[in-house]
Length: 171
Image 1 (cartoon, helix red, strand yellow):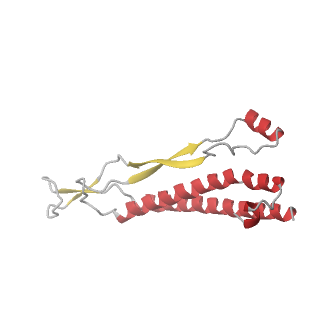
Image 2 (image 1 turned 90 degrees about the horizontal axis):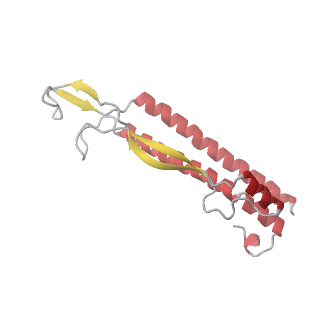
Image 3 (image 1 turned 60 degrees about the vertical axis):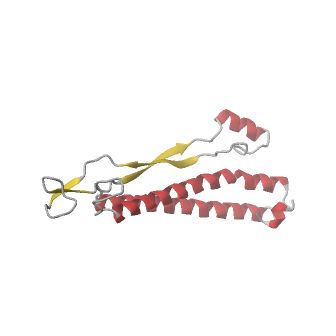
């Protein structure tokens, strides 16, 4: 927070202007955080795509991130009432919306089987369970996560530009 904002040098309008963007920053930040975690999970999957033995026993099982939309917005009626009274929407809310990761789930699909009776992890029939990780799918998921991450960064940069322009108007 700039010193002039903390010291009360900005007018009430400028403070409302800045506070109106705080919920947007929070929403964008939740998207960046969620996509970053998604990329971490994808990296773990790729790293373990040949792991046939885990601490839990058996082959590594692919992990998936499960997202959930967070709805922290007021109803249209409440926003209209707040706006008419000169108040900023969602300032009183702890959660302003966005996305969150609610679970890192295991992919229930079957393991791949490879016949290799000499492998120490082979079963009685000579088959080794291989992880259910498909490199092509992981690369595609990583590309999608990277695009979503970049879109959130772009949205943040646009918001910074809008805030900067708005502050210039008040000078």
